[in-house]
Amino acid sequence: MVSKIRLAATLLAAGIASLAAERSAAAFHVYVNGVLVDGIVNQSFSNCAVTIDGEGNIRIEAPGYRIQVVQPSPPAQSPPAASPAASPPPPPPAAAPQGALTKRYWMITEQSAQGATQYNIDVFINGAFYRRLRNDEEQVIEDITNRLRPGPNTLLLVAEKDFTGSRRSTSPSHSFRVTVGEGIESQGTVLIQLPLIRFGRTAAEVESPVRQEFTVNTR
Image (cartoon, rainbow, N blue to C red; front, side, top):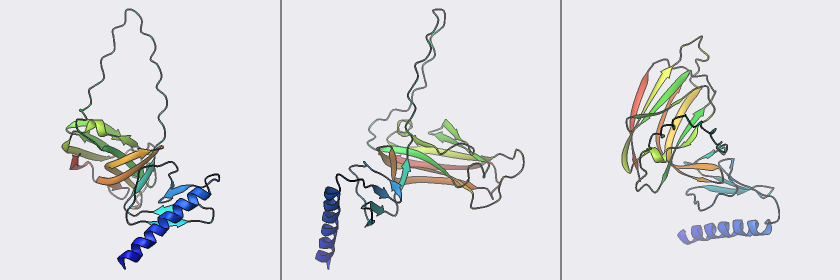
């Protein structure tokens, strides 16, 4: 039985490679969990299902894997020239040394209905304030590797409800979620391979503030 399974897997891999070779001059795409990932390299998936649709596109369903698309950052603009009498700007605060970290770590937000929960979430990393995640902003996808140190790190998330005005929603299906995990970036796509913490609130909840502290071990 084992040999038959291995043979089937070998034939599937050979079939995908053959299809890719035959269609090298044609347009076809690769999707993981419905997200276009053309150009992703050096990645393997376990316990997944592979389908080739009628247009030759390769579709991979990989439970446990999350795909996020990162928008490229706008090019940095040169600061205006300072007048001779102006004092030099203060240096930026130093980030925590990356040390021996060999993996990258990402923070990603997800909202089922932007602004509906009326919760803002403050993030503290190793005792220092990092940033506020606002319920009325677009999705946040940030590399926080340089804020972490090898070994255990403390992340504190504090959610506060904004009661200004009327309630926008009371539905438990309207949620604001934060995920921090270990992942990779390839061709503008972030793949969270190992989720480490998940934190969130819904529009039905009113408790405020809500604090939750996590210990994240990095490598």
